[in-house]
Amino acid sequence: MKHQRKEHITNYGGHRAILVVVLCLFGLCLAQSRMAPKKKVPRKKVDERVYLVHADQLTYDMYGRVPGAQILNGHVQFKHKGATMSCDSAYFFEATNSFEAFGHVKMRQGDTLSLNSDYAYYDGNEQMARARRNVLLTHRKTKLYTDSLDFDRLYNLGYFFEGGKMVDNDNVLTSDWGQYNTEEKMAEFRYSVNLKNPKFLLQTDTLYYDTHTSLSHVVGPSTITSDASVIHTEEGYYDTKKGKAQLYGRSTLTNENREMTGDSLFYDEKTGVSEGFNNVVYKDKQNDNELHSDYFWYNEQTGEAYATKRALLLEYSQGDTLYLHSDSMKMYSYYLNTDSVYRKMHLYNKVRAYRKDMQAICDSLVYNTKDSCMTMYKDPIIWYEGRQLLGEVVYVYMNDSTINYAHVNGQALSVEKADEEEHYNQLSSKDMYAYFRDGNLYLNEAVGNVLAIYYPVDEQDSTLILLNYTETDTLRMYMKNKVLDRVWTSKSEGMMYPMTQIPPDKYKLSSFAWFDDVRPVSKEDVFVWRGKKKGTELKNIERHAVPLQKLSLEERGEQQ
Image (cartoon, rainbow, N blue to C red):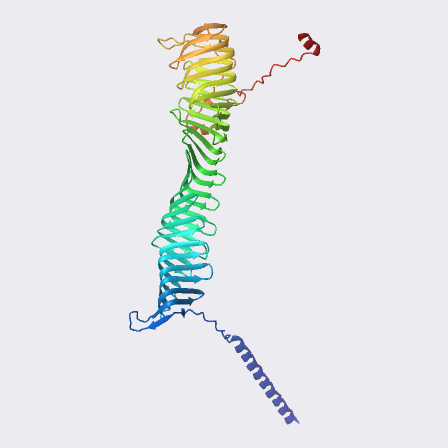
């Protein structure tokens, strides 16, 4: 019994060993099946061959005039990768997958692209067509004319190198060299580039042109001429459909007698609006002035303009340059393009002006060309040589760009230093008038509640003789060669004090003020605002009209 048991156990072990081997073999097969590379499915091979579709006559001579070429004549037609080519005759080099085409050569690619020429060489391996003589490339509505054009079908790129002309809608572009991408609809032109349109002419050295959007990008010295407008730029974008220009690189826009230059300019032909940014210079050659600012806006159709950010007006008409600054400047035009045209110039907030012989400050200023009047509001002060003039409102009337007369309205005060010490010639009144001839003051007139302090001068040693105090209703001071010549007054009262016997309270009028510390001292100083000290500002005196008298019915009856 023990022997049988042992045999039984031995047989069980054998079966177990066989099972292990089977499992190992199964696992190995499974692993091999997983590790074995998948069999590649062969891709469909692209046919790169050029096919001859038709020819009326075909001859072949291996050692003839054109070795290795099939000589084709009459209604020759090829096809290659979606394109068809036709011509009058051709040399077909089947071994090199290429051909030469002669006479009425036409290549068609889809229904949007065609290439016509007198001669062409086509390389099927490179997909390159080289067309020569009377070449016309047509892509949708765009046509490119040249005598030498290479067209790369692989990159949809055609380029010419012996002069060409592109016609796109109303735009005609010519240059010595250029290329056109039919897929991106982008053209690049170089050397002697001209873009003509019924509305403008663009001349440049390098031009990028999008036939889809009609957007031009110029690089290098460029000129755009449109009616009376001329644009000069180093780099810019011009939308030929919308008539909009974006100019960079210190560009200039000229329109008749007006010229605008800036680091960046934007111009819309349809609206007539121009915008300039950074270091903008606007020149008005007709009126002999120019305006500087870091932002400028102008509408040529309405004649309206606006300048801010370090706005500075330069006026040249009176010999020495006048520098006029304010926070903002606006110009309005009325009855434009008529004989009755006139303009108003508004300068507001912190107005400062400088010229060698004249300086001024005020809060706001308005100049009207209709009556040639410049009005200064809110604490205006004018310095003319050594004289200070101030009041509530100052009106300055011009004549042919030179000052004619000035009117100080309300709390008028004129102050002039009589010597290096604290002696001042002073004149105050309700209204004051200063009259000029050839730019020089010859008459100063004060009207209403006139108070005057004047120091006569010894002609020999130029010392002050006495103090002359006068009260009157009207006073006129006549000047000769910028020196007081004579004085006229209506009925007046006054007092004279020797220099050593002047009472302390008689040196100055009650309204006396000397604002030399706020006076602009140079053209750069106009940008530095120094207003009057608090408490020294003039307060406008409200003047009431005389009330109308109303009569009763009885009184009316009596008068009748």
